[in-house]
Length: 239
Image (cartoon, rainbow, N blue to C red; front, side):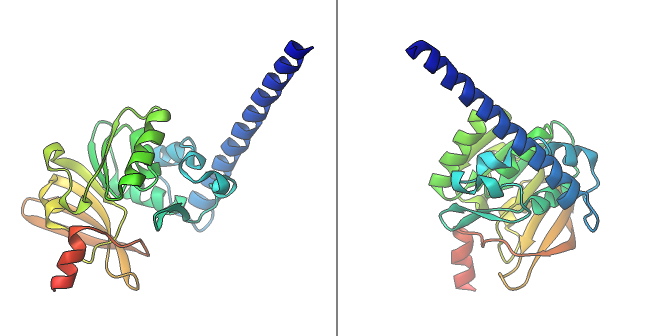
């Protein structure tokens, strides 16, 4: 009898897990159809849409918020930080126009979700997070989910990742008031950077393209990101 009961509960739990996974998969498809590619939305890159339908955002949010994982909203992840809304993740990713095998630096790992999206596109991802607890948690999640093409570490993203440079693309998920010079220096000639710039009350997402010594800038979307921390804070105080 005990063996039969154990087998019953094991089967029941497996079925429940399968149902839960199916529920999240359906939620991802609905997210893509309604929030990214739906009426009034402008994500058109088929590769980006496919990746957004695969990456399990619910794995990157606190367990108590998993039911809200596929709503188009930022969610708290602790330490005063958030996971960006899916539309912003897709929009920033699309702006970079990544090719498989390109080297990408992400400044502000946060939950690790954006890094997973970049990795699914076939990029070699280097992601840096100034809050050590978040960096460790994200690295653990990415490893558990099998993202072997992501290297994560704790550190001040203002300085970038010099030993891994140069990068084909850089994505910044926290907002300085000016583009950090070390990041410009670590961007390849012909490289792209997407970064929120400005104080919290007047931020814009800016797409930069590097052409030799010149930097082409294009403001593409008004946004509101958490401020960049670390060395950049001291520079702001000295101005």
